[in-house]
Image 1: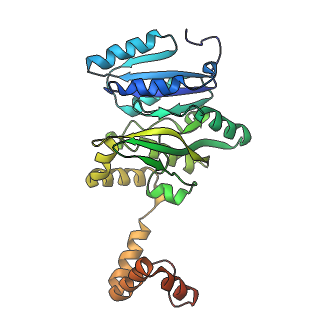
Image 2: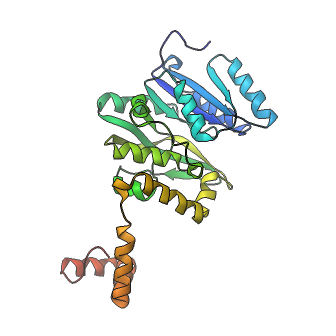
Image 3: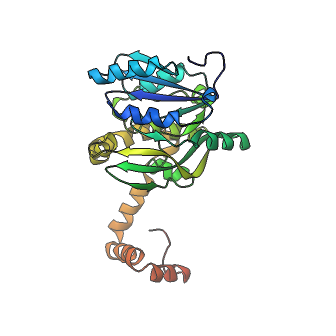
Length: 285
């Protein structure tokens, strides 16, 4: 039976669309997490069209532990928002339906929240499996770095009050699919909320040859559209593209000098560092 009598500490929310047997691996990993009374799992079936997916989700719901919500296809942002609307936990952990959680993830993240009352988001490293293997290191939080690219995966735990304060995933811009978590993290950071990094892989990220994120990276046009949307939506923080303008002007005004510094910095870093220390070169191009 679903744990309706006891309010869970964590709500694991999973958007689902035609992921076939992958969901079985996700469910298996969740079943290995101890203290089931401390968390709930909400799956939103975002209008799956293949027969196996719908039948499998019915079987999963029949176990009595997983809550499955059906909706017409509205996209991953709407699916995550729907799951969070129905979540009862104090903390939210989004999980993609083809990834796997490590058993200790919840315990380690909750320990951080307990020790650091001002932290709003906890993120970590993760294992790659599938088309790629290895460990992806997320690195310490840096807002300037986050504004340039997303290094915090969607599978990061946050306090429910984050959504109550800044709103959910942005489902108003169709091109944002693939970077919807990035926009949420930016919005959280711009509102002054704190992030905490656990330097340990606490989930497994499936890399597919035709994954959405790979298609997004390869699609330069869509990437530009997303960047322009971010800069427009958060114009008070991004402002004009001063970095591009500065580099372009330096390149135009002194082509040979600029290329000389680039070559030194890339191929002769010790010489570059020595000349910077001697005051002969600026450290930043």
